[in-house]
Image (cartoon, rainbow, N blue to C red; front, side):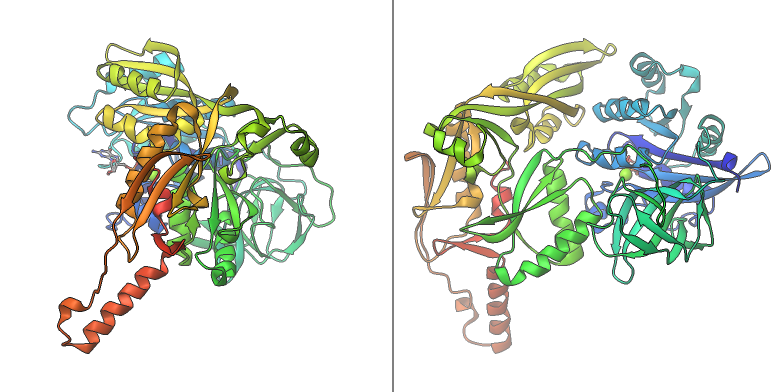
Length: 603
Ligand code: GDP
Ligand code: MG
């Protein structure tokens, strides 16, 4: 197929605006999947995506479409909409020449629409604006079209109107994609060069790579080399994803395809890496840089015998999620483990859910933290570290207050779009979270766009949920990095019967210490089951106790109510109880359910 008949594009939009549903219709229309196959959002194939109803992984499908008597190859990438997975979007855009910018005709332009629009604009991609959900009665396509003109300078006449659910207008979208998105600007009559833009683990074939060929072509049997690692591989198979794998004899410049070449793990298969022919000089194919993680948490096996299994599960999951960073960590209380970096709390939760569902491991996750920067005053520590500033994302490693001269915390510039009715409560929330307003403008008669500088630590846990509930679900939020500022922090320790519980210790702003202390002890009181001994829960800063609660002891005999009777039932109950215990971590002889460490942070 000539390059002129290839189009590579992504669908980008805010969460729930219908990207995955539109992808379904496009696949059906081109015969890639059967109509009414009884499955929705076919590209959302991870268990966590189905359970949560959100896309967390960008997925690719190659489809063939006939337009004016010529067959076109369209490579479509469905992307996630949530801010925590924006790395998936930027990764995907590296293999695209254009995007479908999808906007819900009821809810209108949202914060993530704005963020994604700018991502596409930065990369100078062609934009096909599409309004979705026009089948809904209270949809207001005219108003939303006006907003798009105002915010993005998009011509009102160019905005398509579709219902992804019913399939109305979807055919026009494909035609518009072919007409307005340029074909890939690549060269075929030269040596092979390609960009790795996704990878995942396959039990039989090892790490598989999704590649975008920029130069030349590739065939099974050829020898290739990685620019980053210099390692060499023999090409085993090449395939198109339609979206099922379809073997290919040649993958040519402009195409996107799946490469199997016996790569073993995430250290070999690097997103953004360039592949070229063996022993040939080549330059990097893309300028893709993964986003820097902003939230860090320790991950430890519940017991050290599961260390190897957990390591392998983490490696395979990271292979499929290039935004996660991993470094080795160890703690006197928890043993050997890892410190992982994420793009947000939802990202962390989804990652842990994938560890559990796809690899059957249940680790302990320590309280997530942002990276604080401190300036040391203690000459001994300065000498020990060879510098006077330290970056701390593990609260347990924060030096004593009298060794610290200054504390700095990371900030973000947050963008909130909301119906005007909710502005009051939202300003209240931002003030409570130590936010400083930068601007507040009307988009139209009903909606406002506000910008706030906020401490990152104040938004990672539940800011988004609070914003949604304050605004009946209508406000949306996105944010970008905004440097550091000087502040005052303390370390809050949690003691269970006098023993410091390292996985729960946190760094908090001094003005929040008392509130957080109370909230944490109350929450722990709910989460820790009553046990044989009385449990004293204390939250302390240094030697000062800010809050305390007690869980009374009681004796529990689960089989008592069974009156001896049926032995098998009794055995079953005891077994269930033993299994329940396995997922607990013991601190000072107190059993703490392993997911407590995350749950305690939620308000
Ligand atoms: P994504 O997060 O952008 O991928 O959105 P999904 O494709 O998962 O869709 C979110 C929700 O909107 C689902 O419940 C869809 O059934 C629904 N939806 C998508 N397109 C339409 C549409 O054209 N009309 C209506 N009424 N609902 C739609
Ligand atoms: Mg989706």
